[in-house]
Structure formats: structure tokens, C-alpha cells
Amino acid sequence: MNPLDVTQEAVISAAGARRIREGHLWIYSGDVVREPRGEAPAVVRVLEPGGLQAGWAFYSRESRIRLRLLSRDARAPDADLIVRRLEAATRRRARGSARGGACRLVFGESDLLPSIIIDRYAEYLVLQTLSAGAEALKPLLVEALVALLKPAGIQERNDVRARALEGLSASAGVLWGEVPPLVEIREGDVRFLVDLSAGQKTGFFLDQAENRLAAAPHARGRVLDCFTNTGAFALHFARRAESVVGLDLSPASLLMARRNAELNGASTAEFREENVFDALRELERAGERFDLVCLDPPAFAKNRHSLAAARSGYKEINLRAMRLLAPEGILVTSSCSYHMGELDFAALLREAAADVRRPMQVVEKRAQASDHPILSGVPETHYLKCFILRLL
Image (tube, rainbow, N blue to C red; front, side, top):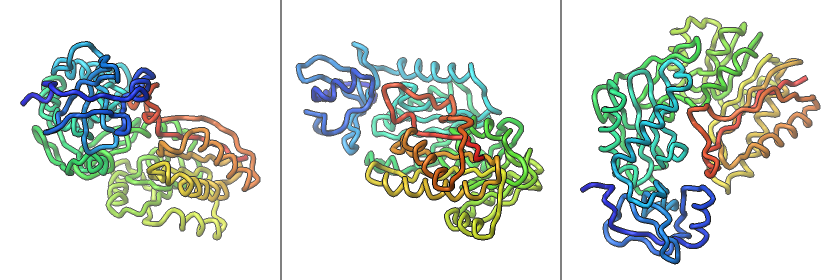
């Protein structure tokens, strides 16, 4: 059965239709007036209340995001449309920096391929299909990627929580060709080993790549890298600093960080298995001082309901990091929580600086890397905030 054979319809509310006209691609279950019965189709024709066609969308019966708009064309989407969008997305990345062969080739909604993620690591690709509609297109996507990019292998990384929200099971493995246990990439002058089968996200935090390159020149003296994961920020800093200490709770991540340090000859980088909140308090009590502190925590605010607690956590780690900074010290601090907006994040940083009674300069305000573009009508595509600050 061709998943793009559209035979069923979904009718949306006036509010849902207005949301689409304003540029968003998601329609939530509360704005679906009538939806398909029987076996759930991958793609449906979307109608406004008066019967006017609004477009064509991926359909996910189990998801709160019931519809993800794929096209507003008069005619139904077909395989050629999917291939054209893959071609366009990869062409856009070709105009930018390949960053040593590691790059996000398709960023879901931002590339008009909702819930589809494709990353390149050297000659290998990693694919995520994060909705029921996208999952149905998986064979087509693999076939198109092989023809378009001729990879050595395609790895599936559908072992993420988002799939459960779609009523989909977790799955991971090689979809095509062969994929080795570890792949080496280069970011600037730093080399990294990436585990495509089990590493965070699709193997590496590609969205911070340009922020790491921007932050690296500020490194000097003693550096503390919190939530270091596999050492990505730390090893950029190690090329300029006298010493770097990376902290993380994951033994597996720290093992990879040490392998990456060895790969780069970074003998001044040390990695410790510690809880960052506890470690910051202990370092403060010990009177330690650093010339640069980096905070790249996981998302504290998973949803709007957890925002208050998340804000408290973000403020605490940033306040304690500021107390550890020497005069003229640099704080590189990030939040990847969409629900923690840039203005709110900036406000809590100002509050933390006021609490420690130190003037704070904003050196740079940054976002996710340019291969994770922000689609103007979909604010959820702007999730990463990164500030480079100087504490006087």
C-alpha cells in the first residue's frame, strides 16, 4: 500500500484553520472536528469547517498533535514531493559549512518534512521518523536517501520518548548498508568519535556545533565544563586553556569523552563522574575559581507545567557558576528547553548576576546551529538559547 494514496479526510476547526494560515504546521486534537475512522491513514486531506481545502497532513491518531501539515498544494503529495524536499534540504546545507562531515540534513518542520530528522556523520546517515505519518514513509525515505546521497550506511534511531507519544514502538538498527560501531567526525580542529547506535540524540549534539566554535576562543586558564557528555565543549576549550575539568553523571559518556581526549592529545582535559549541582556547591565551598565555566544541561522544562521548577534549577546552576568565576571570567550557558524562552532565560541570568553582585556583560546571544533553522511560523523550532557572558 502506498502511504501517500490519500483517501480520507480530516475537518479542522476555525481556530485550527487560522493556525495554519498563520504559518504553523501542527493541529492539535482539540481542533480536529472530524477525523478518519477505521485503519489510520498516513496522510489525510485537511478541510476547513466550510469544506475549503486547507492542505494535506500526516495523521497521528494517538498523538496530541493530530495533524502535521505536509503541503498546502491543490494536488495530493506524492513521492516526487518528498524527494524534492529532501533534495532542497541537502542543497541548502551544501551551501554552508559541512563541519567535518557532521551536519543535520533535515530538521523536520523547518524543512517542511514534519517529524523527520536526518543527520549526516561522515559517509553515514541517521534517520528518525517521529510521527505515525513519517513512520509510514520510512521505506520511501531510505530509498530516496540512497539514490540522492549514496551513503555507506543508514542507521535508524527511533529509540526516543517522542515515539511513545505517537503510539509507536521504539526501534533502532541499520536500515541500509553497514554502519560501524564508531564514526569519526571533525568539528573545527577537534576530532570526535561518535556512537551512532547509542549516543545521545542521533549520536552527537550537532545543534551546539557553532556555539562551541564561537565559545572556544574565550578559553584561557582554568575551565570547568558542566554536563560535558562526550567532551565536545571541553575539548574545544582544551586547545587554549591550561586545564579543563569536565563533569557528568553518565559513565558511558565520560568513557567516550576520555577516548576523545586521547584522540586529540588533550592531556590537560580531565573528566569526573559527578552530579553538577553537588559539585558546584563543593567547588564554591572550597574557594575554587575558574576563568571560564560552561553550562550545557539537558532540558529541565519538558513541558509548560514543569517550567517553574526548571527556572529554579537553571537559576541555581548559573548563580553558582557565576560565584566560581574569576574577575573577567566567561560564562557559556545554554538552555535547550523550548518552554524556557529567550527573554525568560535572559531575565534569570540577570537575576543571578544581581544576586552575586557582579556586573555582567552579554558578549553574544546565540541559538542552535544554522543547520537547525528556525521556521518563523513554528516557534517550537527555536528551542536552543546560548549566551556568552563576561562577569566583571
